[in-house]
Image (cartoon, rainbow, N blue to C red; front, side, top):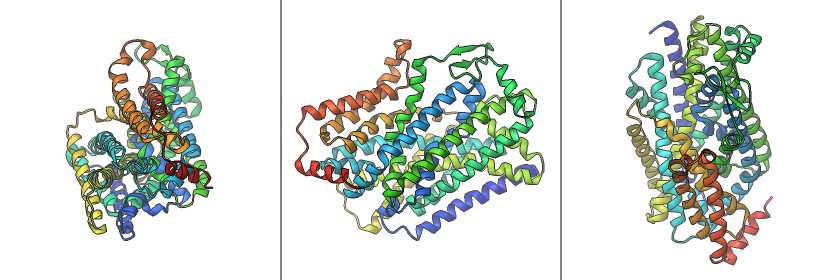
Length: 508
């Protein structure tokens, strides 16, 4: 290994060790499953805001978003960022406070449990369906995070993919299984800071290496459609292709996914003081806008660096930040350490998502399927053992799924996002804001949304260009409509359920 690689590795090791130490510290404060899965509803406004957004962004922020901008320009990446920014803000504005109050009122510590208790559903069928959906989508989602870590270390240091992936998985599982939700949330806060520093350093260094901001803009302007919000640059022909209204609406629809993301919704449920949600909303919204804007700019600057011959043309556009970090590390020990921080930022994106997904999937199995559906009663100590055992088991399955280094595990991320958005989003909104909704509508809507994600993507989207939209949008609409219709044609909710709804609505 070179001196630069050794410096990068030292920073990464220190960073990973710090995450495990945080987990060990919070293990002393984790006394029951309520603490393990929801942190005892004691999250402060800053931790709530930053952990929610860090757990949401994943490696997409530092790899996927710059990669898209590098290849096609700002259009596709820009509309995606706008959709996600609007979705983030609306989720905090509309859902956060009501979900926090309602879940606390009915003493629910997981999303499936909230659905079940909201409708006073004794058979726990709704809880079981929601839990199964979470496991189906989150286990491969988590596997993609493990794979990202394995490929990152393999690319940087020539380390065997499988060894790198297993070590990364052990670290993530280590601090999450030790400290549970509080460890995951606190590490997410740290990771969001590391991600931000990495983005800023890469942007400033990249602009310098590209010959300055004016050179970056001149290079982008020379490429047809590159800086347009209504055209995609075609790298093959050197021309551009229109980005029509259908594509814009389809891309903006990514924002709908937030209403159904279990790992984000859990942060809302864990807030200590509902009155401070406004502060969390502001922090989260501002950070998301700044982070995604810089991510897009990094892609544009990266292309400027290629034009200026600072770096070689990329075979994989998503490695742009890694290439910039490598270039930075060649300027001495200090800059090599900074490059290590940048690489840690990529790890932070992946780890902050994986830890949250592991907790949600684990709670679905241990709390909602074993405890809710099969009525297995355990002591508090046994519950903690089962919770950690399930988390480790899910991690092992994730490693197995990601074992093939050539597998396209990342392809499932957008599909999983659509799946959660369509199955849970409409149910969450109607459960919180429509007192006439009932358990029959919730079950029907959830199933309709999940099925339509598959049907639209694999069958309908290919029938005509006008139907070739992101499957989340039509699936979300259909799930919402089905939920409403079924609720209206089936028996009304009981007076007890309606009374509880009114009590929660009046909470400040």
